[in-house]
Image (cartoon, rainbow, N blue to C red; front, top):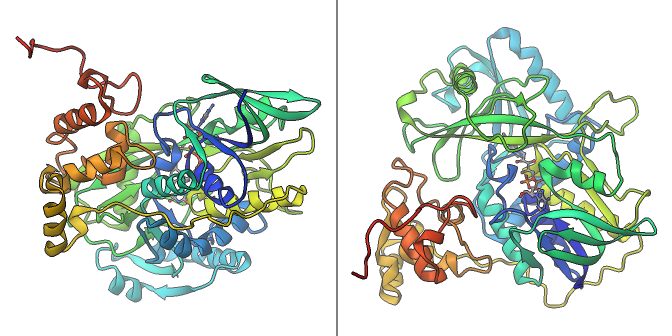
Length: 493
Ligand SMILES: Cc1cc2nc3c(=O)[nH]c(=O)nc-3n(C[C@H](O)[C@H](O)[C@H](O)COP(=O)(O)OP(=O)(O)OC[C@H]3O[C@@H](n4cnc5c(N)ncnc54)[C@H](O)[C@@H]3O)c2cc1C
């Protein structure tokens, strides 16, 4: 049985950040993920906002992690080379009756230690965001809010971990722990059992099952909370920053914002469901999202919608540990006493993307507090190198690239200008992109107006050729999602 120092269960943004932060130390680390790629859970379907930190209840772990995490994003984006823009965000009050909520958020933000907040009048926000509802009566502006590309973030953190020595096993599902004398000494998976001194629960929606297998917090339960979205075509309407409505008791509300790729994104609603795999969109849900968004930006036009999707928040029921705070869905970030060798991260719902680096940092500190000797590697490389993106280059740079490798001269995705060279580079990257969706998440191919109608057959061919497999074996997102069923003619004959 191969033995590791640390096994991390789940390669979402939290697991990948923990892997990246721990890769700095002389530890033998295994990161396991049940899906065919990293970041296919909540980390792939969210609003992509780096929250300022005025939303979480003061005194909660969520609030502390939010503000600490927010501060880490500039350095992280610089080192890991992913798109991140600190554009700031607005909470807009529509009508006079919503104005008092802005004061409450302001006070929460002050208590949480959020810097750079300013109260704006209706005229000021109308001037800054010309498409906003003219009935806006004021806004809370938080200059530390931002947006990122969450797919790129997860891939970057995972690549950084892998190039610094972490072993990643995809399509490897946690099944149970091996426990001896109240200590976790191994992890059972569908691909065998691996020994470890520490196991980290970063299983997102399934973090309750994983902690229960360790005999921890039997009362803890994740209730999936669905959020549905629309994506609009680029440049159809200009939204300069993140626009939030005043929040509801269960959610930050339906947001209208821009992505780092220039599309407008609208959503999410918040609906508690039972099925942890139900990422379907519903007519009612989408209607709720549309009406919510039009309250902020009445000019939105359904004809500009190019895609819809849904994500699931891992809503937990852990109480807040701050005295006197009546708040029932805080994060769980702990090394429990009842079982040794277990780092338990549960209920990492929104703003889990923002908080992920702070959670990873907290994991390092918690391990040090147990007396674990974390010795830094001398050759740890904080920088993750990227591969060229054809559309972002100047004409001179494009020419040079094509001269060196003619595959960069063949456009495969016309909407997003993605070349064969980029696709091939991702297939042979430190974490090989082995499915259509893995290539899509890394290059942004197939996300434009035609939604992959043009590029899909070409990508299937390229994947088959580069991986040395039959086109029949190429999948959208792993086993069971093959594109082709059987040959329709004998190509040989
Ligand atoms: C609708 C919505 C909007 C959001 N908006 C924002 C936002 O704007 N800003 C923000 O900061 N946060 C936002 N969030 C929250 C954020 O996306 C999540 O908190 C974050 O992505 C959680 O990361 P994670 O790694 O814990 O979970 P996940 O990304 O779900 O990763 C968990 C991983 O564990 C794997 N796994 C599960 N069980 C097993 C097993 N048995 N064996 C192996 N692997 C397993 C899963 O396949 C998955 O890949 C939003 C979330 C949603 C759903």
